[in-house]
Image (cartoon, rainbow, N blue to C red):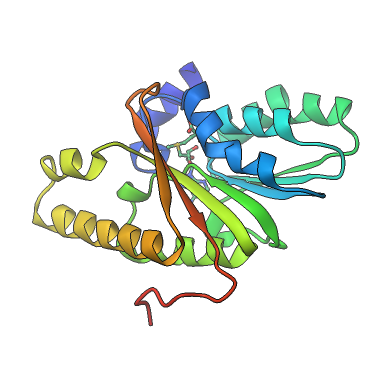
Length: 215
Ligand SMILES: C[S@@+](CC[C@H](N)C(=O)[O-])C[C@H]1O[C@@H](n2cnc3c(N)ncnc32)[C@H](O)[C@@H]1O
């Protein structure tokens, strides 16, 4: 917890929240896993101190594969030491791999059934938001699910704190969100038991890609 708060002060843009997510949000973010049969491939992006990782690990079974991508070195060290390494020792039939670095640079095999994403998209430039969503969608199998979260009303609140350029960016991000939501059978769940309350947004990759307006 302290590690998280320290990193917020050091790098608020990429850390993107003031507090790790709650167990209730972790349940909403990971519930798609239960419906998947056979050996499942899962990707988590931006685990921070691991609230979603812990829930995923609880739900994985023998033969499953989890890749975790995190850019923050301190978070990676803590995740590996406190969560992933102890898990591997007692679950030799589940493959769990941590990739330290940005998701934009990660070398991943894809074919994921589920991607759980904790990235603070509202802090990123719209071009990067588009590029990351496009890459993540490509990493899913047809019918696979991408789940991300954002704080309820975040763009409205942030919009009151930034200048004209920031407002324009937030508007663009809202547009990207709407496009994705419409193109990928979007669903969302409000989770009040989180600080602050958050929306878990689920997108499903259609067998035939739908145009998103990007050239
Ligand atoms: C909002 S925090 C979420 C942490 C955790 N999932 C939670 O909900 O408490 C965002 C996390 O994404 C990581 N992150 C930000 N940009 C990233 C990128 N481009 N690639 C990988 N990780 C990134 C940050 O270091 C941070 O750990």
